[in-house]
Amino acid sequence: MKKEKVSILEHGLVPKHEIVGAEEIKELLDKYKIKREQLPKIKLSDPVIKEIKADTGDVVKIRRQSRTAGKALFYRLVIG
Amino acid sequence: MQTKEEVTKELTGAGVEQEIAELIGDEFMLAELTAGLDKLLDSEEVEEGCAEDIIRMAGREEEGEIKFGDIELKVNESAIPKRIKDELKKKLRAIRTELNNKKLDAILNGVAEKYNKSKVVPREAVGIVAAQSIGEPGTQMTLRTFHYAGVGAIYITLGLPRIIEVVDARKKPSTPAMKIKLTGEYARNRNKAEELAREIEKTYIRDIKSEIDVSRKDMSVWVSLREKELKRRHIEKEEVKEKIEGMDSDVHVEEAEDGKLRIQVPNKSYQELRKLEKEVNNLSVKGIEGIMRGIVRRENEGDGEYMLYTEGSALKKVRGIEGVDFSRTTTNNIAEIADVLGIEAARNAIIDEMMNTLEEQGLDVDVRHVTLIADAMTMEGEVKSIGRHGLAGGKVSVLSRAAFEVTVDNLLDAAMYGETDELKGVTENVIVGQPIKLGTGAIELVARGG
View 1 (cartoon, one colour):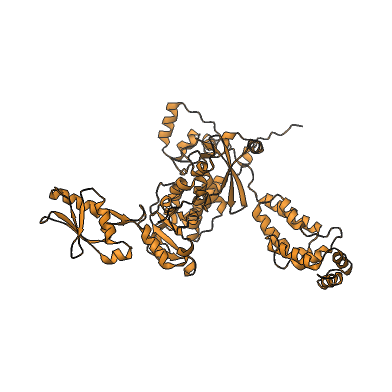
View 2: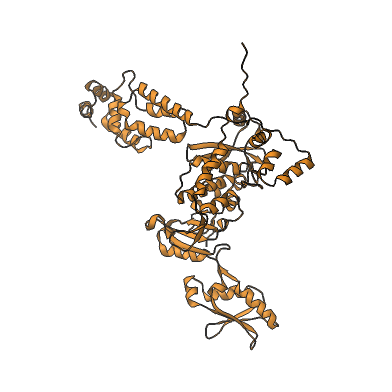
């Protein structure tokens, strides 16, 4: 049995996560008139967060494959 | 190289007006033009059969008439989701020759309007709608049902018990199972797939022995192995021997003439040998912890690629095994998915599991309801159950919690800690007899006098 680990980011169930820049975060929060803490959360210990090396307080943008919309954007705040 | 005349002739033959054909002929050689068209046809944007239309459209410059590329551009600009865009583009392309700018604008506006109308209105109680939309079909579901994966003998919980399991966010489902997709040769060759199945299947001595006993006469443990099982599972006797000897440094194994294995440990009492016998019986020879059985099946009723169904689940451990296509391998253990692949993957898994279970029971529930539940369950970064210990238990309102379950406990705790209820939710306002803050109740309008 060969061990050649496949990245979890390649898995069909895992959508693309990326760290969002400060400007985009402001736009997002203004658009929905919310505070950063009101965003859905993702844990620092989440395997994808470890993989993309995001830190506590970062906001990640998730490009979901949606069954109804085709593509959908979702944001999560990284918490410790 | 073609002459101008040839180009014009060919273009007029394709239905282009004489005047324009000549214009094109001046600028292009047809070879160039068709090469360009071929390139366009190769790209995903343009479908087969567009070539003539492109040539025909090249001749349309009158006002209001649609130009090539307009459809693509305008659809992309309109504020509708990608899936609707894709569908729209396909349909518009089919009627492209009958379109003009005015018509196209009318269609796009119409679609955008319909889309906006179909959106959920702010303050709509989507949670209740979702709960009822799953609850009602739930009454039609079988209460106790197990099912086979394919024709094989793997049990998987389905129906209502499975829905409850998912919504309860159990750490381990009652029947863990994996669907392992294979790569390359493994997906095409049944023998290779079988080999892999035997490789990952957890095998203990007890699965391959026919007899195990302690002999008082020579103070040793005797194991006889079933040759057939060894062959089926691709295990060499030598491997078994090594495994047993690996248990402890003073364990010695030798093969007797009749093929039996004799296990000797110096200075052991009969009692201790009895204990050793049990340990040997439960000794693992090969395979992955947690995978009880692997069954090879073909996808799509027997003509697709080969894949493995397993009883038991160990997503982390099958990653990186040769022949396993990890990127397409899934398990029905959602907690495991959250652990290995993250919260977003868990959300997808919840949706898939629930939709598949509902579909298998012949129930048609809109995916949006299920999506909402999955979103609510994963909102905090971990998979939370819907219930006392999860979402409902995490509510801010005391009255709402008390109304749900264990009323007295909740009220008592709240009194002890001096909690306040802001009366913002539905339940608490119903309890105190106020209008609920939902739908029209969410807006406070005051009529201006005069």
